[in-house]
Image (cartoon, rainbow, N blue to C red; front, side, top):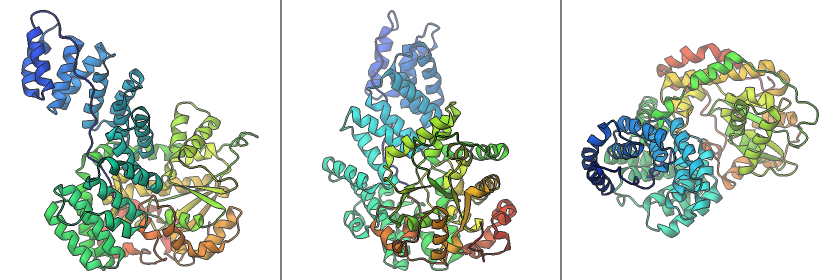
Length: 581
């Protein structure tokens, strides 16, 4: 589930010297009121100064900071824009403007304001922390991590960035790094119950349920309703792991009544689905999504033009390119890419393949997105590929001699970039009945992101998934020799046959360790995706054609996804030929 800490972006010092002359006393009164937190009094004192034709940048700066304190965002922005235009050297102007834009949901503009502040004060810890916060809220988790770490290089004990970094590492499920970060925080805040819950969540996702239970605060000890609900959510998850579905469901419902936190409905829906109570499950998932859609971080992400971005890619098509001789030599590695619809089985496949001793899986890194950004800034494909590897190596060190598999469902959005960077790379499309994949997206409590925000409603879920299917089909048609289809339905019914076929494609032999992949996954590094619980269970088939239980609600799926069912053989039924593709 999504982990958001209680932290705020903040600005620096109060304004400087007051203007000379008659308004000096009024100015000092405003400054004093602002510094003691009496923004209403500061506003009254400033009003004549702001209305005077000779109002200068310092007056507008204080006026903007006062209005920000009063949460009057439009008025604050108006004053602060005038301030940074006239006194751009004042760091507080850029920081407070960034805070106001952040509060108004204009994330890119907020990030730009903080970036401007960073060029003027590269040694200011608050600037880098604020960049971490805004990037985390935009779903750019690894960028957020970089900014938090930049802040901690300046001030190693800066509490906001320590907490931000620990939360981001937990979000990424980089267990060892996150474990060390939380241990450092526990040394400073040993009685912080929210930290204990965050760490317990991390331990559970790392398949250490007994350790998670030890850190989980007991029922009734938390006064914060959100923290209380998070604890109950995790307590129910631990009950599910033990097969105690009914007691977990009862606990969740009591907790939702007590706390009013409807995100608990996701876990309720999961239990109801496993109990075969499908109408109740659908109601629970819809209620959970409705609660998320009202949160500011999701509303901000919904403002991003994701559908338009994907439509532009579909209109542009895939540009075929050939890499000149020798350009790949410096990279030494040609990755294999795994992608597909979210919730289609990409994590299941990567856990199977990662059990092979000669394979190293890169788990949902964003190297292609970074490369696309570089190409947009006129980098050459060679330069963009180098940036791709620089990004990868910042987070994972590829093992010498290993076959590198870069797995990320969102790579579908960047297939046109892949064709420029690695035109000879193999691409494995993991396919699942689009209704099943889309339904699973709708039912999942994803962390905020530009794509996952679209999964809060059935129609937008279907629309995004339909575009993903079209993009995969477009790439496959342009590059048929480089692609392979792997159907989820085959992975859960005859996985050895399917995995042998994949290994043959990438030039490796079967290894007996793959047979016991679930046990290996449960004891290895944590799964960094929403599928962590499913892929550490024995293979099960209950997710095949699950959509049929929910057909009365799937009118939006028929409208948006019906036309693409035949693209990957799903129009004719589920009995997929394992040799297809």
